[in-house]
Length: 217
Image (cartoon, rainbow, N blue to C red):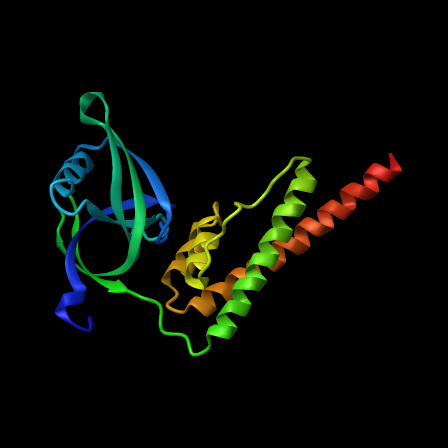
């Protein structure tokens, strides 16, 4: 149950198949369905926020935990369609659905990560994830024979880094959703380290095989 009424609000909801939005990450969208055109026009008159929920094709319904998106830019197109740029804000949990038409609105509570007991431990996991990420990018570039680099400035705080890394696990929406739902920054970084370590080993093996075949030929 929510801790207080201040943490609860109504929020228009936008289910998207296999899309998981994270706090601090951009999400461009093309809005063409009538109900969502109406939704965007409505929120533009208030706080410009709506909730993004991954639509789960296995259950045929949206998940219950998502991320609030704030509309930053709007480009209006013919027939009332629009291209918008949004930015992920707070995570939320859907407590109940208030109404379904003309667009779905939910009663939601905000979610925050639990306070950590050791900032040093958290920083250690952040450094480990960064190192693994650098290795994965380097090996990927070598395998594809092209220069690939990380951005010059990665997020500096462990929680921001954990969201940034999770947002780049594209093609694995179920894994991304699991990371979004975690309420421990350390647990999120630990899981990301596991994924990156596995990816690094896989890429290293493929790179070694490629080098061997090159030598033979």
